[in-house]
Length: 106
Image (cartoon, rainbow, N blue to C red; front, top):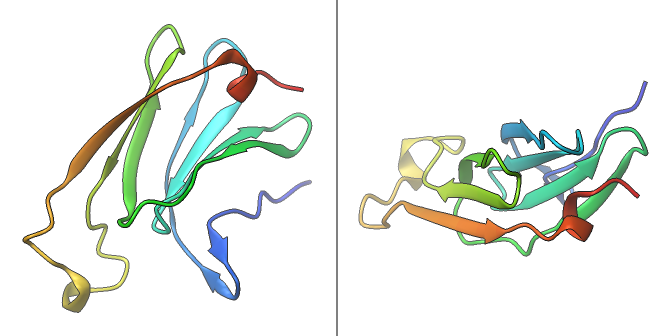
């Protein structure tokens, strides 16, 4: 068995908020409370791409049917409780064009 250790910074461990699979390649993406997106190759047990963190938690994500677009949203996920919620901060949706070399297994 293999554990994908992801969404960690130093000694802090953050929640994985969503996992979605790429239909063509069988690779997958994780998004987390640390504001990071990772693309993974499950068969070779390695990370294919790590995105720079954004300022908020990433709550959900998915590939489009063709697999060339990856959409993800940032919003407060309540993992730190109500005292960290800032209602004035808007939720956002991002769309990333997926290049084959980012998601294709190695």
